[in-house]
Each structure stands twice: as C-alpha cells, then as structure tokens.
Length: 109
Image (cartoon, rainbow, N blue to C red; front, side, top):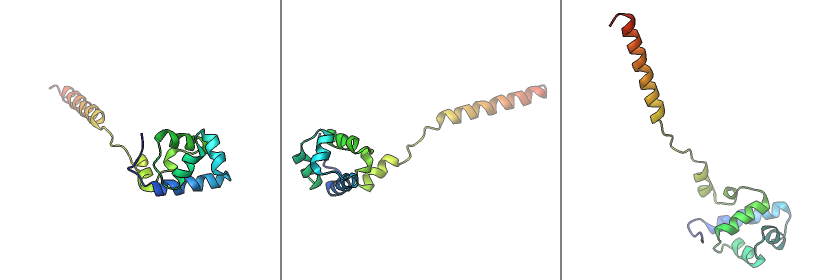
C-alpha cells in the first residue's frame, strides 16, 4: 500500500536526518532495513513509499515510525483519544441513588 496523503518531502528530510545521525550511508541503512538501496534513495528524494518499507526503516534506525513522519501527521498519533465516560456516569448515578435510599431509610421512609 502506497502512502500519498502525507508530505513525502518532510518524510524524506526526517529519514535522511535520522540516517545521518547514525552516521550510516544509504546503502548501510538499506541493508539493515532489508530494502533496496535504490528504493531508499528514491524515498529520500520524496518518492512514494510502501508502509512496509517505512516500518523496516524505523526498526533499523531504532525509532518509532511517527518520528519519521511530518509533525502535523505525527501529532495525530499523540492526540488524546476521546474517552467514554458512560461507565463513570452510571456508577456515580447508582452511588447517589444508594446514598439517597440509605438516607431515607435512616429516617424511616
């Protein structure tokens, strides 16, 4: 599956920076990620890529995939998920009902 919905230019620069931080050549990273060096050259020039290639590259670099993604895309991974509050609301309502019933029972109602 090819990814066209994110900025390949930013991905390319992030990937290149991560590779260079390790002091690796394109060929060395490609070998460690078990992908073709030509494919890595193309990705670093902003070409389309496959998800499996990106996963392999992040594993070889020892970093999460989201660190290779552009900031606007990576931030989507960090966005808080909406929490389902219904269980808390139901338990609180039941607690209040039991408290009211206990209070009324103590007055003989």
